[in-house]
Image (cartoon, rainbow, N blue to C red; front, top):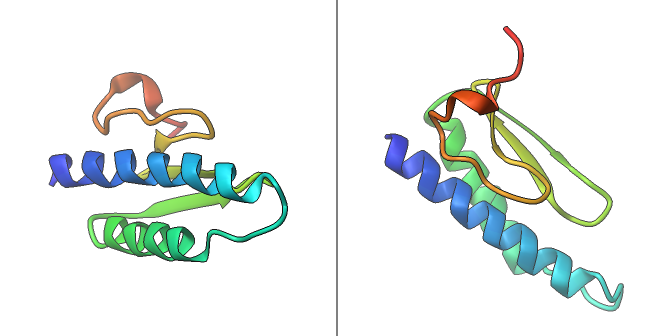
Length: 87
């Protein structure tokens, strides 16, 4: 389970980067990549509670069980004790 969560987080981070690269020119949308990212978010939700928020550039911040696994710049392995948010 943890390996899958981390694998999804890594892929979401790569998709964030690719989406921002494609959409930064404001000439096209990365719809297929957004669809893939949404599917991965759905898969994460099968393992537990997720919250996510998209910024104006197309990056998604992802929390899994109140733990940041993807922020706007990087991904943190699930289980890292430093990425816990509150109680």
